Image 1 (cartoon, rainbow, N blue to C red):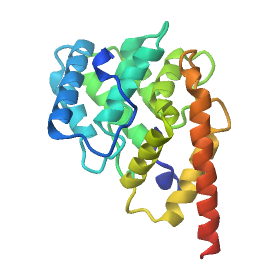
Image 2: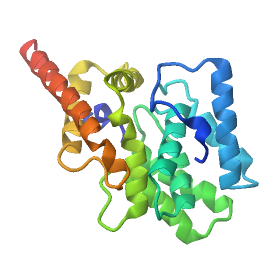
Image 3: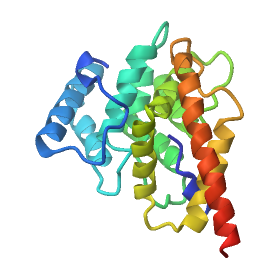
Length: 244
């Protein structure tokens, strides 16, 4: 997902099946198991760079993350495999690992996406990847700012669809996702968060949410969830204005 609007306004394997977001916490054994599976995936993706994979997982374990954590990373990787067709999965999977690697609240001088893309250049450069591949991974990471891939960008479409798949959860899953994002910005007052979130979610509705053939099957459910959230945010925004 993009850097949260509150701030803007101010698989590799079947073992990861499950909802996009299934609750506020993972217990210790559950978290250890998930991270072990992710490390195995990373080692298959980029052998001999285990420490880099572990460093990325440490980032996704930061205490202020309630949604953008290891569960989100696992879900995105799973959806990449689910939606994939004739794509360069190596680069898309790398982009998935890095896309929320920097998630500062509030962000620093760079947006979180730009900072994550800079991390791509530093770490994948050290890992010895070709510059062309590094540039592509960094581009894909920055694309998650807007989730608006241009025509003839299959890798961009795949990453964006995987990142937004959470929008198509059941109403209960979607509510858990919304609550988790709000918890990440618990210090931001509603007067700032609500209009910011409303602006971003409204913008998402101006075009298709999904672009891959398989991802587009989620369009109806996701659009219904987002429209319901937008309606709720509009009502809350009006109440905030009326109460000021």
